[in-house]
Image (cartoon, rainbow, N blue to C red):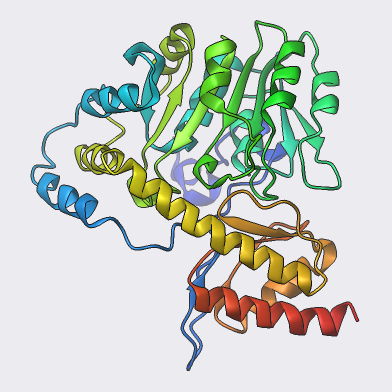
Amino acid sequence: MTAADSSPSAASTPRLRAALNTFPPYVPGKPPRQIEGLRPYKLSSNENFLPPLPEVLEAMVEHAKDPANYPDDSALALRRALAERLDVSLDELVVTTGASELLVALTQITSDATTEAIYPWPSFEMYPQTTGLAGAERIEVPLTAEGRHDLEAMAEAITERTGLIILCSPNNPTGPALRDDEVRDFLDRVPAHVLVALDEAYWEFATVPDRARGLGLVRDYPNLVLLRTFSKAHGLAGLRVGYAVAHPPVIEGLLKAVIPFGVTDLSQAAALESLRHWDAVLDRAQQIAEARDAFAKALRAQGWDVPEAQANFVWLPLGEASAAFEDACVEQAVAVRNLGEGVRISIGEPEALERVLQIAKAFRAEHFA
């Protein structure tokens, strides 16, 4: 090899998979801009704005002792507590580094270049990323005008190549929750060999009486896997703990695809302690839901078309005005999530929501008068 051959300028670009060109990278929510005289608020990542439970913080301190040792790979204590709380068996549970890892693992065990993946759109941004990385053909089924899953269209999209279907309830970013009867009708039309993932990252915030009940559904449909997380209602997003509930054959498959030792001892301890305060977690979720409902009502009173909001955020379907609305919020030290077709606003402190209402009122007067 000559010096010229080994020089940086002669080096070729590494060959990466062509599938990477078919979807954008996941882009996290932006932090707020620092503006003198204004307290900044981050309403762009659907985080829990309430302070952590004191008992959870104490458990974290107690277990932050020996990072030299690997954690329990099976997360046995946490799985036992979850199994008791959810009334399922240990072999129907897997704990992972957030629900995001579950999405990656699900595509790995169901999808490749010979298969198709069906999911609603717009929905969680990782759906096209994970299915695209697996090489599957992505079938994005548009939501209805009300921001809801079009389950009829999703059922009609199923072919012999379908390997994975993803549902999201409440849907991120639009907010509506699926109804139990409509999900059952849909699952009755799905071939038994097709795996369906029900993403319930925000289930604790849903308040409509007839909402989909994931645990009951997964008991009745062996091809359904339920995805949940400690990130939202439990307020442990930074610790990355998620879990799946499914029939044993599906769990066995997931265990082959998840990262070994992914959930740290500290994270397991915090999630376990949070489970011990289940009622407090649900009560806090109800507080956020009440703030969400009041915020959505105030936006509708201004004239905004706000879809049903059942998670810890509200969706404004602004279309081409999304970027301008995001900019208006940025100028007032508030970060919201511009997703192109609309803007998602996480529920935060009362002062933050009041500031957004003032921005929204002025923006509507300027752009939609």
